Image (cartoon, rainbow, N blue to C red):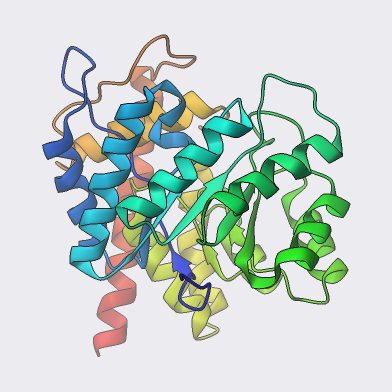
Amino acid sequence: MSTTTNLSGVYPVFNTTFLADESLDLDALRRELDWIADQGADGITLGMVSEYLRLAPDERLAVAEVAADVARARGIGAVISVGAESTRLAARFAAAAEGVGATAVMAIPPVTLDLDEAAIADYFEAILDATSLPLVVQDASGYIGRPLTLELQVALLERHGERVLFKPEATPVGPRLSALRDATGGAARVFEGNGGASLVDSYKRGVVGTMPGAEVCWAVVTMWRLLKRSDFDVAERLSAPLVSMIGHQSSLDSFVVAEKHLLHAQGVLRNTVSRRPLGAELDHETARELERLRAVLRSRCDDVVAEAST
């Protein structure tokens, strides 16, 4: 049975790769996942930015299987999102994720229904019943759905202990994170989920890890290592351009198009194809600014590495 003991650190959310006709490109996905592992990530995550809500069930399983396979080969973790619009389907996705060798599962509640707290609790309980894996309870209401109540999250932790982790993204992120920490006496294990933009503040509030985008995961890995040794001032220097980058990404699809653009610019992806319809497009000036900020971030990371080696 998997535990939460090694579920910490930097778990970038990878981007699902497509051919020009929007069919899956699993060979390209393997290359992307290997690149993420090469950057020093502790694990990989199939998350919202992976466009899993646009995948058919068999495609979700195929992507999860590739992710788990690469993670196993590279000795890192794999968190697989299993959220769905029905409890039955979410439970089946959870069981399938365990079957292909995932380290943990993650789930948002259904987003097309206005459920009461009891129904949402039943949904998460069914996922936990379907697998022995840890569950990361994701509140993605910063861009989809509505916030999970503090009471619901505390109750899940009280019933299941460390098997339940959290990824709170409802605003304001910092105060909500602290409220969850305080309500559980510091027992809640939390991943930062704002692309790394709030990582420094979230680290001070007690997070055990972060699930940023993949496009500059090398910078987030460097930041995490700096924070682990309490080099907060240096981490802040890296955080500044990252916060500016995230500032250009205000919706789920804006994250998708920006991240794929930057991964393509770095030679990681062969194209920037996503499944349509898309709720965001990347204009030329924004793309140029994102590339400028990535260059600033790369330069600052290189300086940190150079200083550490002298």
